Length: 472
Image 1: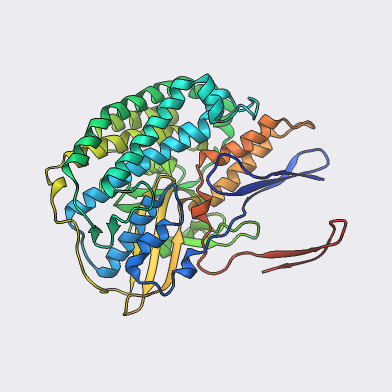
Image 2 (image 1 turned 180 degrees about the vertical axis):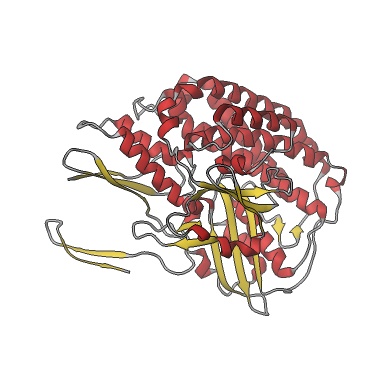
């Protein structure tokens, strides 16, 4: 018996490792995906005023703070029992479009493009953004420009690119400046052109990866994501829809406050990342996926012209329910198209410059749940408060958590398929890491628990042999 350890998994946000156990014939017998860092925002927010929660929880991550701001603010809206002004809802969604664009651009161009452009078996010292810049400078420049545009949308609307204070319980704290609107609209044509060029390239090469498509988490699971009443893709608002592996709608419209009836949270012994599951099916059978792949599976359409055309081609090419996690990459590009078109529609709305953008109220409910679609998938914030509005309990379920069981299953599938020889190549082990990158995990966001963390303490002698072990 021998063990392979990939530590750390590279080109992801946060810290993780993978262990692969081999038998005497070097066949894979067991794998594990370990998230090795601990957060804990639920606990240290206790006692804070509920209206501070958007600003506090946004500090969970520097990559997707806007998503936490939105889910948190929606939970606070529920505690206040207010309906935010329509223009405030549009502005929140516009900000989220900027977040989707910049985050998806980061994932596709900076984290995954080295594999897609240079090859999974290319030398690791070149398989990075510098290698992309040298061999495909136009693609590298496009990636930088597209991400910059998304960040400039955030900065223009919220006055800060990271951790802005513009989103508040009840709406936003300032109306849109007409000059900012015009500047963003002026930048949209080039952002769309970049996305079209990238799409044309990716469509021309996607069929060059048949082995990866067939074995990168190509397994039947459930899927979950926000949709509107007509089944259209939603990133900011809507209700949660669950479908099964054949595309049958299992839960058509789960209200945010009912998530506990459908989503359970398991604790794993080998990771600080909890493992949500579809509660009616139990753990671990209730595995489901979230994020771009899942959103395009649960939705019936996007709702904007170019994105709907890409959506139709995507499903015509890969099927009604797209199973392979390799196609997270393709789905991200569809969502960038949608986010650009949706951003344009929102900024062109006649009411977008209205000045009434915030509803004010105190504590009118002792509990609130907010759900938004982070770039990586469904994000849930759930708060309980006392009569004075102080947080007494909080629970966060982030996108990477929802995908935890699926990531582990995907790692196992890739390892069992590609590791089959006595001599291991670096490219084979890169594929094990690459399937994790396909999910674009945000591990800084992910490690939160409602109850307890799994803890193991081992006592070793001078030779490294285990003398005793205690598990919580």
